[in-house]
Image (cartoon, rainbow, N blue to C red):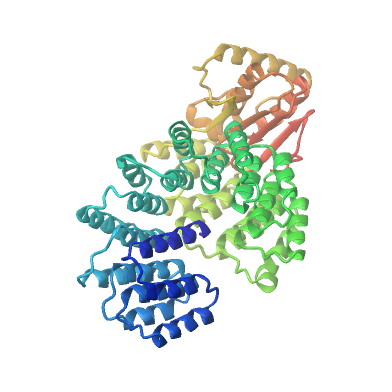
Length: 603
């Protein structure tokens, strides 16, 4: 937001400089306004303005006064002066509109633009850019498209400032393709344009394309990346689990002197945490002299993902003691930490303290954490009772809540609860494929094979197809993706040979292999693979063992929950080959070493 405010004030300065050459009578007024740091001093200059004999019809001087009030966010005084001007010009209108944008009243900017179009004053490029910014803040895509069309008609369709604002607006409104269309149409781009395009991709879950644009920027532009661009790039690396690219971006942060920026440091903490390097995340956090709520939240979430519930609690207590107010995301992080560490009483204490002690209203996502907390310790009846009492605002919230309960009820063999949870998901058209598969799994786990097969048949008849599970590893600057049972990749035969060898060595140590049901109904069954040893995470691990030199930690990413058999196999293999593996699944991290896992078999 600070970046946007600074840009707006620079635009206002540019606007004012476009006015005609200042007469000598104005020079003293302008200099005085530049030195004003509070509303009283601006009002004093305002009074001097009239005493000197200048009138309200002096648009040049009045514009500087309007800008003086806007700069101090005294928007009501600025608007009052604007209303007293007999003939406000384009600078007058644009200055006031920008004032509303910087005063968090973007909706009034759109209203003013409509009024302006009813006058004889024609908008300029700064006017259009300001209105586009208002649409961006409000996420008003339809209004933004209309302004875009208006800009084309007025001849500003290729203007650098306008186009940069349009890229940002489309990105903020989740229309990334619209942003890219404007970006590609530009003959010239500045750092703002590049940053907006990268941010649009990163914020909308298209991290690979964000990194591609960043590579294009580095090859075409000699200007160094700014802190906002680097934060977006690091965020993209974080979402993709791309440690190599993340480390390279960290190097750019150091070279550019951006380590003191709060946004950059918080994204670095998050990136290393999500890439399986919590130690690095912790080191960066400890170097921050006065962490903000964003940085505290990032490290608390990271600790929670690693099952370090007690550490997440200690960090929460530390931030409160230092006077940093937790927000709703902070509470999600600490509740997850309690959930993944079996700290139910502590988690309930945090939930009950949210409103009373910290003024944060608990939402569905917080109660869902508590449902998950109950589920992980086997208290399914309490979890079920709480789930039925939670009011969800959106289908996505309901999917998270009932999806959590469905997975837990299958693991604990509670078909009765699984039935209700799957029904709710299917009726709301959320996670339909997952609901069918998991309910089928629940019946299979209790030996009800006929019902399980019947559900699979219903699923096929309804044309419901579940996205296949996959795992991937990053080696140097390349990513290798694996799917269950699919050996059609480089060194596939070598991978199969190694897995068979490891299977034999595990059996020598007492490993029994796939347990009843898991072979049939684990989440990757859609690939028709009934051999647990060919689940995607095992393929990724075997490939990494062949390719990555000994002594380097192997990091595997997975888009679904790691199955129980693979979890047991990874523990055994870590002891056999004497290497560390870190797996990031959809829920948390698992660090395998010397035959055990950091989760303590609690996940």
